[in-house]
Length: 400
Ligand code: SAH
Image (tube, rainbow, N blue to C red):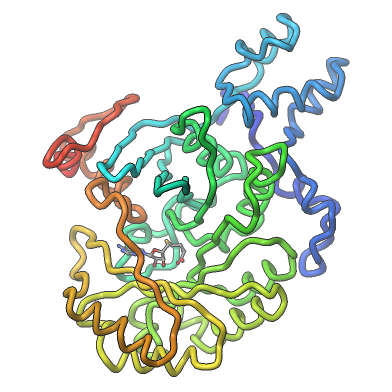
């Protein structure tokens, strides 16, 4: 934004991808994977001032590995340089404006970008797993009828820096001795509609000089954009792909996932097959279960038929109700029957546990609630409020 200091974490995805080959011809050259936790804008600025090149790596190390939030704490930089950095650069461009913690250990952060737009990031804790769920866009343009994120369409793609910061803010919630173990791109937005920025951010965070996660510990969830799936396959990364199927037939998918009218189920399945053939990595299919709509016996039968002969895993997600939308989660009996029918048909299925229900942890729900509460009460600036969820406590009041 005009007048704001440049952000050191911002990264032009074209820079990150330079040397990675032209569109469509990228087969994962080492350059594409070498991106690391570099700060190219800062590097150029330092060079102009005659500072040694390693200063940029020092700053990156402070941010990624030592959790620095200001230049002042970077004590191995000369004091004069620290002052100059403070006046020309910002470490973070997003700020946490709300944090909600559920009793199951799930934390949800509402982040505000420089343009005032808000995004959500969720940290889930489960045994020794520490998983962050990141957003890839502000809003979503896919319009899945049951989802809160797409109710107002897509506003813009998140930048490489913003996605990086989502992960760093979530990491900073952990005690010093804990590390992030997994990333799921299952927050707001259609991940593959912002493929370049997303991959540049993930590559950076997964590099040894970033947060050092394995690419295999990252799952990218997509509504199923065939051309983008093929591009991702050609990038030769180790990221895991999850395709949001939600319906086993063309007709039902057209109803639930409007983009399907344009894309078609057959092309989605072909792209998923292609991903598996090229990468050797099994694709997960996500299936949100909506009571009475796609959880019937015939849906299970059609799903079995669709996936027969494919090496695939299905993640069944009982619907997380969204205020104002007419969908419900299936009755426990119906859920059990659906699972049983799938398994009898030879499908590998699991049922996703709902995390952070009380804190609106499903895509787009917190942002929406805060927006509505702000409008209805004119609460204005939410500041850096930290709210802790207690049964029936402050979180329940957010909706106004
Ligand atoms: N655009 C990507 C990421 C979306 S979020 C995609 O379509 O995959 C990740 C998953 O959560 C998707 O499968 C999405 O359909 C699902 N989802 C959205 N709203 C939900 C809700 N209220 N309850 C349960 N799952 C939901």
